[in-house]
Amino acid sequence: MVPNVFALAKLMNVSEDESQLSAIARQGLGSACWSLFGGFVKWIMGKEDDGSDSLAVQLVDEKHWEDLFIIIAVSYFKYIIVGECEDFDIFQLQDGRARSV
Image 1 (cartoon, helix red, strand yellow):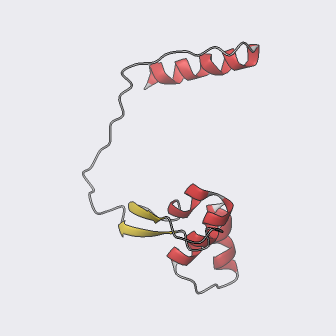
Image 2 (cartoon, one colour):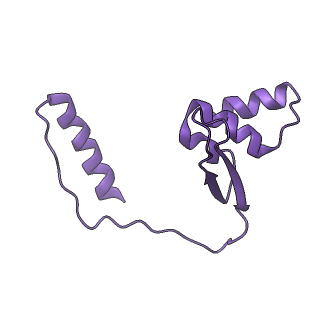
């Protein structure tokens, strides 16, 4: 959703700021509103029932902490088998990904 909103805004020379574009992207998918920015972003929930005032603002850009690294460690991994053969195949794929990380 975000690439569509951003591309259409550029194509049509829309003068909205990125926070307003994020509110438009939010209408399609909730998490899309903060995906428009790089760096650290705050998602403002808003108060309108239709979500029209729910938008994101960039707090700091992606260059703010150039030496910051994020490490994700999985300390416990458990399979949940739901009984379908194709679901089991998905779990095997996840196992391979978990072992490669």
